[in-house]
Length: 254
Image (cartoon, rainbow, N blue to C red; front, side, top):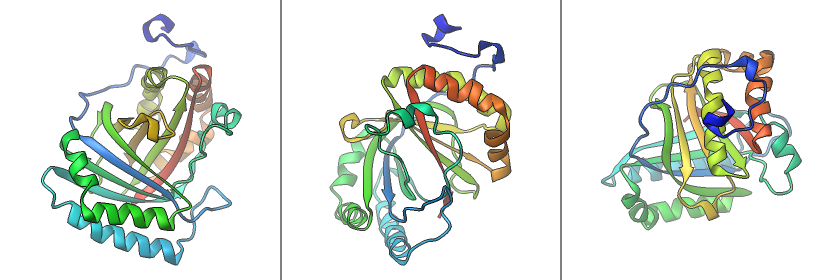
C-alpha cells in the first residue's frame, strides 16, 4: 500500500477501500473567504449587523456577476460550526499556518480559466472584493481548478457543506493522502460528492488544497467525527504522518 501511494501509511490494518472517484470537472473556480465575526467557541451562533449587510450586498453583486457569459454558478455560504479534524500538524505549525475561521465564503464556478480575468476586472467584482476586504479582519481569494472529484456538490439543496482548508509540506503528498483517506468518509458517512480545489495562484493562498462537499444533515457527519475512533486512527494519523493538516469548517448555503 505504501509503495502504491508513496505515502507513509500508518494503521494499515484498518484498510478502507479506495474512494470512488469520477473524472474531474473542467470548471475553474474563484473561492473567496472572509473572517468577519470571530467567535470564541467552535459555534457560529450570532451574525453581526455588518456581516448581514455585507451578505445582502454580495447577494446583489453576485446576481450581476452570474449574468457574465461563462459563469456557471455562484454560491454563498455562512459558517455554522468548526468540527473535530484539525489534527496535530496544524497545531505544531500554527506560527506558519493561518488558522482558518472563515465565516463567510463565496464560490464562483466558471467554464474555464479564461473567464477568470474577465470576472476579476469586472467593476462589480472589484467593488465586492473591496467591500469584503474593508469589512473582514482577514480575507483571501483563491483561483482554483478541480483536480479530483467524488461527485458534483449540489448547492441547490440545503444541507451541511464542508470547506476543508489543507496545509502541507507537499501539495502532491496532500493529494495522495486525501485520496487514500477519502474512502473512510465514503463508508463511514455515506459521502458521495466532493470537489477538491487545487490553487492556480499558489503564491497568493495559504492552503495547499481545499476540499468541498455536502451532506444532508449534521447527523450524517458529526457523530462519525466525534465517536468513531477510526477517524483519528485512519484519517488524522495518516494526515500527520505525511505532514498534512486539515482545518474543516461546516457551512449552510445562503
